[in-house]
Length: 359
Image (cartoon, rainbow, N blue to C red; front, side):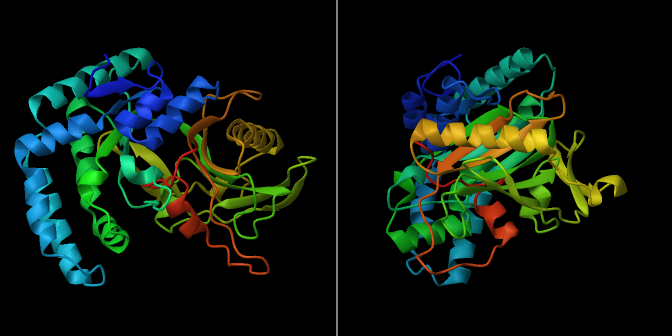
C-alpha cells in the first residue's frame, strides 16, 4: 500500500520518500536501494501529519500557544508551551484515514516478517532535519519495541507530538524557524533482534583525523547508552590497513532488552558473563568497517552510521544499517575535545533525533 499518507521504503524512489516523509526515511530507502542491509518498513508521510493537525485544529492551537513564546532562554515558558501542545496531541485520536492506513501497513509488515505482532521501531523524521543551516540531532522521539496496531498508531502520534518538545521549540526559536516549515514524517520499521548495536564514524569524530575510524558498541539495543547507564566499548581502526589500533572494553552494567508485554525496550542488569566481555569480535569489527567505508564511498564524504548485528547473523553476513548521516562538524586544527560516549550516543547513535542524512 502506497498512498499520499503512507509509503513503503523498498518500493518508492528515495527522493520521493525524502520529500514525503523526511530525510531520515529517505536515507534508509536509498541505503536499501544501494544494496545495504536495512530493516523492512514504511513511512507515514508529512501529508498524513498535516491532515491530522489540520482536521483536529492542533496546528492552530500550536500557533496560539507559541505566539506567546519568543525568548528561547525563558525555559519555564518554553516547557509550559511544550506540555500544553503535547498534552493536546495525546488527547486527540489519530484521524481515521491515517489510522486505517497505518494499521493496514503494519499488518502487511507483520506478514512480510512472518510474525503476527512484529516489534517495530517508530522513528520521527522531520522534513527540516536536512536543512543546510539546521540540525535537530537528538531532539525528536523514537519508540523501540512497539507491537500491535493500536500501539503503533499511538507511537506515530507521540512522534508527531515530539515536534513540540521543549528542545525542539527552543531550537526553532534560536534559529528563526516555524513548526509549520518542519512537518513530521514517521518511520515504522521492523525492530532488528539486536545481539549488539552501535555507531561508527568513518573519520575520528573528536580529532577529525581521516586515516582512522571509530566504532562504539554495546550489547543489545543502545538505549542503556543513551540513558547514561552504560559506557560502550570503543574501537579505533586504521582505514588503510583495517588494523585495530585501540580496543577499549568497558564494564557494562545494564542491557536494553525487549519487554514484549509492555511493548517497549527496557533496561535490566547485564548478565555477569557479558559485563567485561568485548561486544565485537575481529570478524564483526571487520564487517562494520566494511559497511561504513562502503557507505562513505557511496556518498563521497565522511559519515556516521548506526548499525545493528542481528542475533541470527552468521559470520560473513550483513550488518544491518538503521541510519547514516554526514559528519559535517569537526574540531578546528589543534583542538581536541573530550570524548563523551553518552553525548555522542544521544546525538548520533540509537537516539531519538537525526542530523542531516546522507544525500
